[in-house]
Length: 235
Image (cartoon, rainbow, N blue to C red; front, side):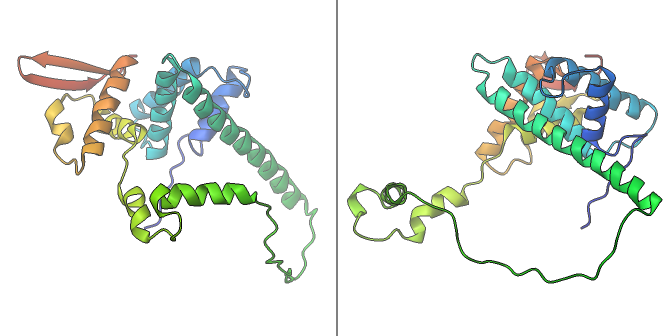
């Protein structure tokens, strides 16, 4: 199925909105203060919803991504947060450059300053040119076959447990919770696990609840054995 895309106000997507906020606040694009930009981003998305605009899922996914980076940055070891932040900055720089080039190409097209030629076939060189250390290949082979089976090639069954087990990420469940709670209605805690198909998915949902509550994005209320969760609209 072809993925639908929405244009919200003057923003073509979440990267366009992020770039707008960076330029508007005159922030350093190479060192974006996540704690500051996440609140401004969520506020913009909330304003779109208040104006009865249909918010595409990409905007909500970016909101969850920013919340997750902010949450991880509060942990004692911020290495993961720095890596996620560098990845986001790299994508934002790439989007900015593409937007600049698109504007230049559009201007060139309007002015007629371009040439056309018939397509030509470019010969392909299929020679594998990468270099590998022989000992690196030997070490990986030893790890694959195990100590007791070094003289025989590894079977497919050796790798099947690694590729068949599905791991559910916490970030994906943060997006799931934000979507489900975005209306503001309270949701029973137990209902979040009704459609879970694996223990990994249940653990991911539980950790997502902890992460969102830690940054005050959701409220967790208890009444005896009844636990309800509600998103915090005013944070």
